[in-house]
Length: 246
Image: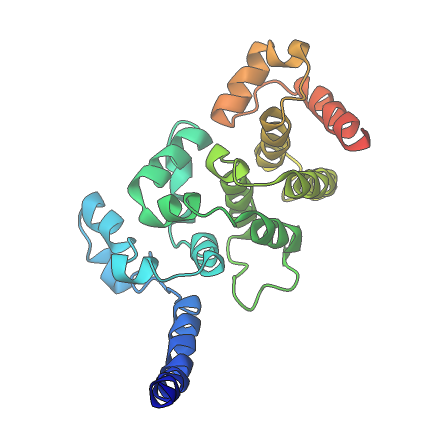
């Protein structure tokens, strides 16, 4: 019996380091899209189906990626402006979520909240503050808009706990004020994704007044992401202020 136990201990000591290394390797599995818009390889893709296929992450890779690396791949998605080719931002994101497997994958992760909040907080009006080493600032106005619409998706909001929602709401309110003073964002298209993010946080916690919820312009904005009535802005911001002070 003593020999048997000693043998077991030897086996554990031999293989345990390997098990740990495998776990770390899985945690560090990353993905850099090999074919991107603007490259010769991309230009050689002659159909929409081929281009969509080129931006799928192989199943044997995506299943090994950590939550953080999956979100990084979403932020670095080469066709991040794809949603803008459709009638409304929400229609565009619905189609992106249905066509590209990276978006489906993050929606199955329960731990996306804190990291997404951290990324959003780091995104300033002129680019990333500390995360430029992993995300680029190219087409920054479009990139920040994409990030806000992404976080505003119900599939993402539903994964946030109460603490994350409150922090995210505070950050969004700050960015809304900053956009009002910034030339690149001081417009209806510029503030719309920020306001939508605020709305969807409040809506998810069921704290909006019936007077707002029954407003047809508000319902259309909540559904489509298109802001057509600026008169609802103050109501939304006031609701956010009341919610944060409760």
